[in-house]
Image (cartoon, rainbow, N blue to C red):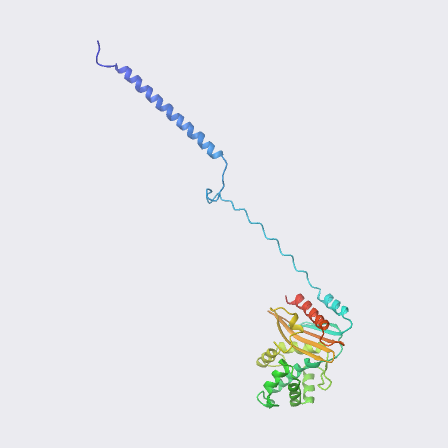
Amino acid sequence: MNTSGPSRPAATSLTARRKLLLVWAATVLVLLGVVTAGVVRSGPDPRTEFLAGPQTQRHEPAPAAPAAAPRAAVDLDAEIKRILAANSGYRIGVVLADTHGGEPRSYGDGAEFVAASTAKIITAVAYYHLVEAGEKSLDAPLGSFDAAFQLQAMVNASSNDAWLLLMQDIGYPELIEYAASIGISYDPEQNLLTAAEMADVLTQLSTGKLLNAEHTQELLGYMQKTNNERLIPAAVGPDITVQHKYGELEGYVHDAALLTSGERSYALAIYTWGEDGESKERLAVIHGLTKVVTRALLE
């Protein structure tokens, strides 16, 4: 009887079977790995912000905001003519001049009007001119105050007393002569001007052709925030600077202004006559004309 255990060939056979099982097991694991990888690659891509990497994130562009409708262009000539035709019961003269040059545009009545207080600007520039020539002084007594005070009162508060004092100090013949020197036919006793002449005075003033820089700025400053802002200034938006001189006398209602926005600047003179004075209807005409101009050229 053999008591030394199983023979060597049996042990070798067992070891071979174990190796074969390990090989099969390894083969199965490899096959499972291949199948799993294929499933993962072919499965749905979640594409979420959290799971997707930088190369796979997709950001759909936000829908573009609807473009603003372009503002309809204003036919300046047609609109002004329409307003004049709709208000034919008034005499109306309108002149618009680009202060940078070019021919002024004229509409309606081009004849002379009684200029009322708009002509105070001619007196003002004439007096400043004499000061610059050394013939007058702003510090000189004039009435109860000095000439500087009377100039401001005449333009900013439209004082007729100040106007009379300044014209008398200049002298009527000298005032006529000065007006002619700047291309304006003006007699202070008749006080007649066309809207075109008034627009020309404002254009020359704003471009420094009449006075030095200091006096130009001083006078233009008096033409802001005056004692009557109901005419042209009332129809102008806050982004437009208005320097103006109004005039009202026995049915004549006028306003003449410099309108400035950025580098753009225009002189606008609106002269009107009617039976009703400064009525709502008259104001509506002046406001309508002003709005057409600012919409077409300054807004």
